[in-house]
Amino acid sequence: MSQISVPCVVYRGGTSRGLFFHKRDLPNDEGLRNQIFLYGIGSHDESQINGLGGGTSHTSKVVVIAPSDREGVDVDYTFYQLSMGEEVVDDRGTCGNLMGAAGAFAIDENLVQINESAFSIVTLYNTNTDSIIKVKVPLEDGVAKAHGDYEVPGLVEPGARIEIDILDPSSGVTDSILPLGPTNEMKGEEGTIEFTFTDAVNPVVYVKSESVGLSGTVSTDELKSDPNIISTLNNIRDQATVQTGIAKDMDEARNVYPAVPKIACVSEPQDYVTTSGKLVKKEEVDILAKMISMSRVHRTFAGSGLMNLAASVLLEGTIPNKVTNVPSSATEIRIGHPDGVAVIRCSLKDNQQDVESVGYDRTARRLIKGELFVPKKK
Image (cartoon, rainbow, N blue to C red; front, side, top):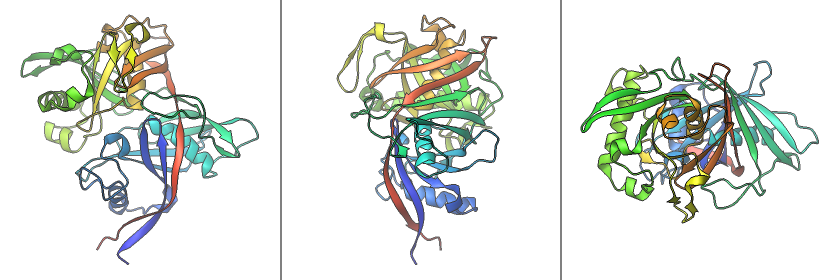
């Protein structure tokens, strides 16, 4: 037999898409498991034409789910970020968009009991970040509801609203929400660059857009067409990764930990036009942001990054905090990203130095269920 098959489900969650597996269906051998992921996505070439990926970071994702033996938790959820054109399977970090789809998968695959109500709350344990996630999934005919009127910026069609809340989301990768303090500095080719490294949900490095020669309203097409600025941002990301101790040197940061941290440029509210051609007025947002993920410009903004940014806005002294006028008592942050405005729930603990919870709403839809075929290792 030249190929083997593994049961697989494909979900769209928020603005991401991923392959979902039951842990019981995968081999225990890490190398064999990773080969299934790599061939399933098609990571060996940038186009991913030989797999189910879409040639972008937000469609190069895998989720593995299993019933949990933790008290008060329904399922354990592990996320893997795969690369384009390289054999990289990275499990340091998580995906906020696919958390909603993970809740839907748990219901659709009968991993949780449901009642006759209009929704079910699924409790996930994310093994990547050691965090508890509450996912409120709407139901229809005994499965996760797909269609509705809730709109997610970056998607053309609305869907059924799924509410996601992460409890105590700090320090998933490092030992502190701000392991380098509210701000830190590094030497760049054009001088000293100030940055913030925030470790909440997923770690993200922030720089003010203007500090790297960008306007806050620069388009994603302009960013994509400027390899120098992408290189500069990646270099900042890699240096911050070393400074926090995630990687021992720049080479390891670049090649072993390409998925986290991510890096984002932020700026104060301004009028801008989305990639869909909609005018967003500065009064409609609290902050503008664009993200680089896996060396690619994100067409919207990673879901985990949105939650991280909301927390950063509330934490005094960070770069996102400095470019906004949002009080620390705020419970919602409006983030203007390339294709619209995302509203994120967030609250700080009493000490005002850490995050109590952070959350937002997504939609999800099961796309296909069947057997994934991958080449058999010789």
